[in-house]
Every structure is written in C-alpha cells, then in structure tokens.
Image 1 (cartoon, one colour):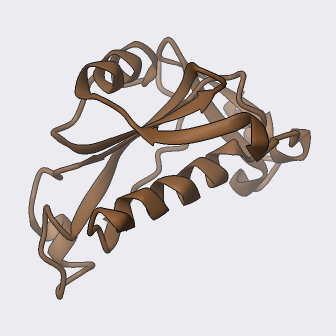
Image 2 (tube, one colour):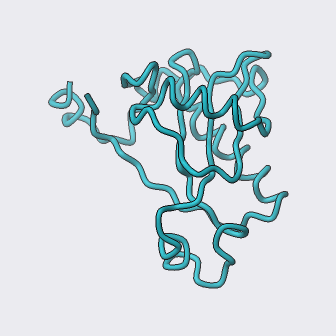
Length: 149
C-alpha cells in the first residue's frame, strides 16, 4: 500500500482510522455535506473511548479540550486538544501565548471511514472556532502519514 501512495502527493489523500487500522480515501471522492454534520464539545469518557478504540496508538493524551464530530446523533470523529510532553512544544511556536491555556497541541484526531473525504478540514475549522471562543489562540499539530501496524 505504501508504494501506491508514493505515486501521489500525500495531500490528495485523507487518512482514516477504524479500530486502530488505517485506510486512505482520495480527496476527489469528496461528497462531504456540512449540513449533515455538527461539532460539539464532548465529555472525557466519550472522547477517550472513541480514541482508544480507533486511533492507531490505542492511547489517550492529557486532554484539555475535546470535540466530537456528529452525523445526526452518531459520534463519527474526535479531536483532542492536549498538553504536550514538554512545554517548549508550545512556547517555541507561540512564545507570546500562555502554554496550556492559550495554546495546546492537537493530540489526537480520528474520523470514521463513513465521513466523506474533505470532512477533516471542515471538522478542524469548526473545532478551531469553538476552541477560540474558549480563549485558545494557538494549536500545534503534527501529522504521521506512515502506516502503523
């Protein structure tokens, strides 16, 4: 599978995780209709259960803020803003922001295979708006496009 992905720029694909196994959807598959989806803060227990079940690491970070992507009333994605391992992860990028209150790390981001391509960008955009309302001004994120076994 990784050889096939090397033929195309990574930005043309959306990576998904289901029960800790990855899959890839081409962005041209599209079909994302934001009218069918909603983003809301969610409780720790729901976020933890979803992330541990679906994220390849099977682990949950030191969460500060948690958001769910819902299709009707079904939870189909989770974004967790968390405390990084070192404060410098935040202060190196956002030296003027107060770490842990004005800046956090996107510690986990997981969407179900059922979410159409391009849902990632919309979900993140909505999550950024909600987090900004709660005083967050900076988010550091890292991506890991390598398949994990």
